[in-house]
Image 1: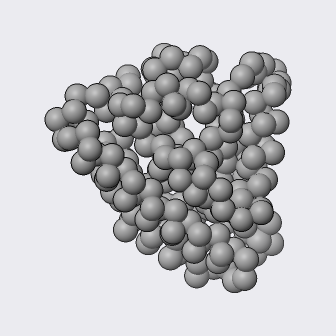
Image 2: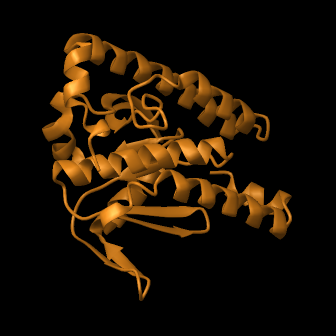
Length: 229
């Protein structure tokens, strides 16, 4: 999002430094998630690909944490992004740099429909989300913005975990990141900012409601984001 404008308004050296700064922060924050070689990450310009092998609780938790970290790090570094989580058979050859599969197509098509900054869940991955949703995961099925308006859709509540992957409402911090992004854009991109603020507020309230229902003790015992590695 806004990458064309960034390319047009920055010198190649400054843009390179900003991208490298993002990558350094991302690599540092996700170092623990990459233990065991479970998590794969590919970046080409402003396009990024996250992969895990499998859908068991461990892989699901690693992907969830990585996606939360990606959103937070990108926004913190001034790179507003959107994306999608899809599931299926995917060919990944890191050495030869060959990557293809239906999940990439599904995620790309859903990504193109999103009209806010965040990560939505493609229908191919919804059953996995539902299977693990009972123990409180940072996902909700609440309204998000797409091309044709608003629709209830599973999506990642990336503002409800702190950088230690503990449940915490960091919406105020996220809004400060959005403030910085908003100062650099006009017109339609500001609609993205406003919509994102609305979704973050709703997600924080929904996760807080779920926590109240489960009870603090239950959350601490069952929260998967605290027990991944």
